Length: 229
Image (cartoon, rainbow, N blue to C red):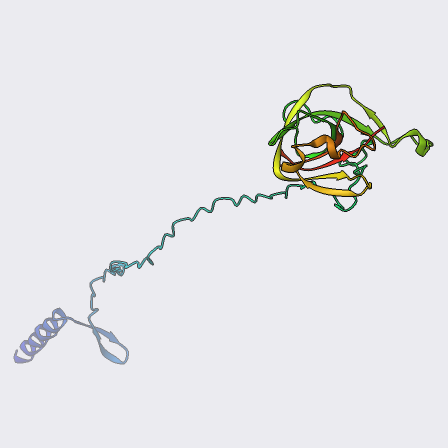
C-alpha cells in the first residue's frame, strides 16, 4: 500500500514537471527531456528614416556691367580744294592745259552753268573794269584741229552766250600783261584796273580785253591778258 502511494506521488511530480514547460519522450535509451519551444514575437523592421537637413545653397553674387554703347565713328574725308594759278609767272600760259581730263577745251572750258563764275580757269572778254570787279563774257577756247598750221591762229575761239557775269577781283590779284618790248609784266589789279587798255598785250591799240581769269574762292586772283588777232 505504501508503494502504490509512492508511484502515485511520483506520477504527480512528473506531471507537474511536464506542465512546467518540459516534455519527456520515452525512448529506448530512457527518458529524454526536451526543452519547451520558445516563441519569439515577430520583429517589425521599419524603413530607416533619412532626415535631410536644410540644404544651404550659396549663390555667387552676380555682377551686372552696364553695356557701353559706342557711337559709330564717322570718318569725314576732306578733299583739299584746288587752287588755280599761273604755273610760270615769268611766262604765263596762252593755253592752259584742260582742267577736265579728256576735254578738248583749254582751261576749265566754257560751260560752268548759270550763276557766279565758279573756281577755275576761264577765257573771255573783260569789260566795265572797276577797282573791285569787272564784267566777264565767257568764251570757248579750243586748240586748232589736228593738221592745222601755226598761221591758222592760236586756237578756235567761239562765243555762243553773250551773258555777262560780274566777277569780284582781289585788290592784290596779279595781272600779267605784255609791255611794249613784249615782255611779261606783273601788275597789281588795283593799278591795272585804273588803265586796263594800256597793257592788254595788243601790239596795236585795242578796244577789247581778252584773257584768262583764274578764280579762287569766288574772286579773281590772277589774270593773264592775251592778244588774239
